[in-house]
Length: 429
Image (cartoon, rainbow, N blue to C red; front, side, top):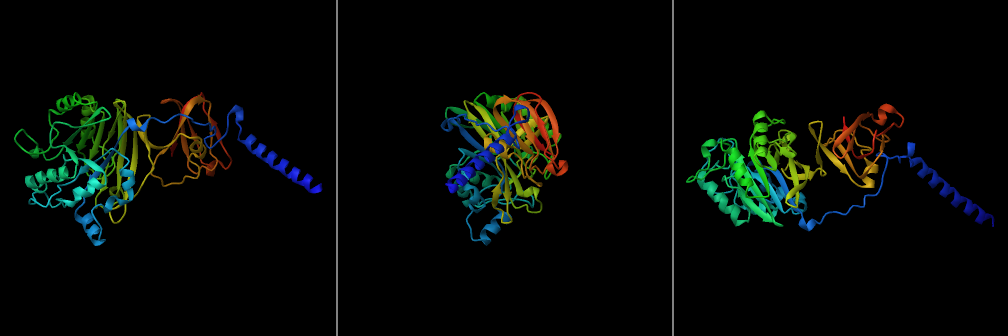
């Protein structure tokens, strides 16, 4: 009897402790407390993925010079640089890269001392990696002359790889009843401009706006690529900004850039994104950290419009193989600046927030997306970075305040939104 009494008392004690724990999580002023402090279930139904078209844009691909030497030294195949992310690449309908040089065993070097020519087997490797569309409008595609360029087209076609940038007509693909157009322009090598009876590449010229307008008339979505800018500069120059805005004013739905070999800043203009440079995807420039990190733009299309855009970073190892990649990041505009944010859309993600995060990190903060509007409270428990917190009604800022790290405050600090909100952004300072 005594044992039964002790057992019953023990069970009641556990129930009481659980009650106290849940009570502690209840809110101050009627709100629940979390790291984000209010976790409710998001039971929204995901969209029908069968109707969704998935595109991935990546930066420069150059599988020759030291990349090729490393592949040979390791006794690997040309698919080697992509091996660790093959499953990821194959989740997309189309993967689009800038082809930084011809794929051919023909031609003679006519470019500078930095001239590139990839073996014909590279085309097969690209196809196996699901890189099925490439831009040709760049400053290296004619490094081995017209013969190698024309042979490149044959090698691409043999491996079912589509291409653009060799014409002022868009490449058009049609899927799920949606017509998507691709145009590519080089801001270099104007003497190699394609003409009616001359093989060449599309270059930036006085007819840029008209070319884009005509292309847009033929498609539902138009994506324009530019080979432009200054090498190793992380901020786009004024010419890049001018050309990007001309493209969007003329009908482009998205602008993708390459050539600087590093990731450049991102801009939003008239609700359209401009990614000024995606840097290197596969390249051998291991002289700096920045040239060993490439950018990727994930584009999700539904109902004949771009529904979502995300950004990733790809990290090359010393063998010029993509070793790993970042989580999917949301490019989000606040006060005329684009931040790359982790996305929190579930109660588990809301609860975790940015707890235990320490610098250095490769993103700018976190965006919390909720299914409804509520007064919301955040705290700095287990938060080791200083935060600037934006309270948002949809995308409208209704308040902003600082939330110092627990290291600075020593005790837990709680902040509360001034009005009901359905989004909150935390920027790491």
